[in-house]
Length: 240
Image (cartoon, rainbow, N blue to C red; front, side):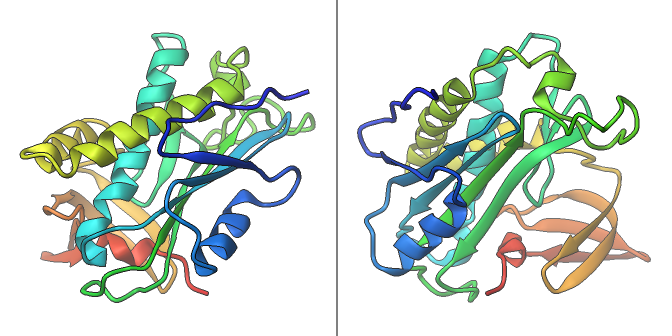
């Protein structure tokens, strides 16, 4: 039986069982649940969770909370995983262990208007703990799981608890002087393919170019055919 996780005082857990924690959190957010709800589900194959947030700034600057949750996961894995395990973060939310995808973060919001104040944000997390037994090692070099990367002994509940604690620390730092700059520095050191060619699918467009960096709201600076575009991070928000 999976142990019941313990979360920081400002968060309260809701076990989703076999249901989708992200969908439950989004439904609860639409109904007006208070910020801090953390829904979760653990199976032998994957860890899933979702956190409801209530930003006090417009959507685009509020996207820093999404970055904070990504960095919170990296911090949690950095504490629990073997020291040789490399954890990197894709700009759009993907999580990589030793260079290969092993899950990621997703986002939904009450609005897609960058200048509007969101009623809520929901940050979802999914980590692959084990690959299907029929998959041979090396068959999917860009897809991996914790057990394939020397992390099979990690307790997913420990990861979940660590994610909640570290994410809350980074979210709280956003209100401190210099907190966003610190988040920017830490995240930039973990950003996958920073300064290199990238290709990705957003909800409404496929993008390709050279990932030059990010602006103060973590929007991607993408160079394509000699022109540099700013891709707001809010573009990753899933559509209804």
